[in-house]
Image (cartoon, rainbow, N blue to C red):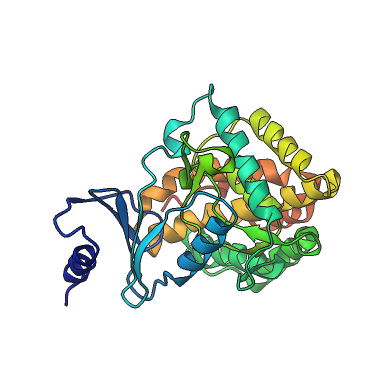
Length: 324
C-alpha cells in the first residue's frame, strides 16, 4: 500500500474520506502536515519518525489544562496521526507591537503553569551533557567543515567542550522541569475564545524533555526566527520570575544566559546542517540573526568561558553562514 493509500484509508475510517486535503507549512523535521476539511490536521511522520512521544506529551499537557490538539486517531506503526485543527493564528503570524505584551504574557503564564506541574515520568533528559554534545556536533561536524573545508583539530573541540561544561554547570545543578525545547512563537497559537492558560495553543511538543526551566524562556524571548524587543524580553523574564518566587533571580538569570549561549551556538550551526544534509537552504536566512543573538549572549558574564574559547578558534569575521 502506498503512502497516499495509507492516508486515504485513515481519513476514510474516521469520516473524512470525502474531505479536501491541503498541505500546511512543513517544519525542520521530516514530518509534513495536511489540513483536512472539517476541522482536522493530519501529521504524516513516516518511520523512523515516531509519533508515540507526541501522543504521551499531548495527554500530559491536556491533563494539566493546557490547550493542545485533541487526538482524533493515531496509527503509530505507520506514523499517521489525525488531530484537532487549532486554526491559523500562530503567534508568529499575528504578533504586532500593540499585542506583543498580551501574547507573550499569556505564553509566559502558560509556561509557568506547565513547569509547575509534575513532569511525566518518561521524559528523556535535556541535561548539561546533552546540551554540550549537540552544540559541539552542529559546530564541529557541520559548520566547521563547511567554513574551513576541513575537519576541526581535536584541540578545538576539547577546548570548546570544556567551556560548555563550565558555563552549563548551573543548568545541571538547577531545577529540572518539563521543557518543550522549541517553545517559540511559531509553535504557539492564540485561542481568544478560551480562558486563562487555555488561550495559548501549543504544538510541535514531541521533543519535550526534562531540563532547566530557563531553556524554554530563551526559546521564546530570544527567538532565532524573529526579532523580539529586548525590553519586552526583560519584562517577560521578570514576569516569569514573579510567578516562580522560589527561584533565586540572580542564579536563574545566570542559567538563562548560559542556556542562551548554548542554544544560539547550536542553532546557528544547525541551519548549516539543515542546508547541507537535509537540502533545506531556506533556513540559512535565520543565520545572521542567530549569530547576532550568540554574540549578545557571549557578552554575559555567565558565558565568559565559552566566549574565550570561541575567540581562540572561531574568528569573529567568520561567525556566520558559510560563504562557499
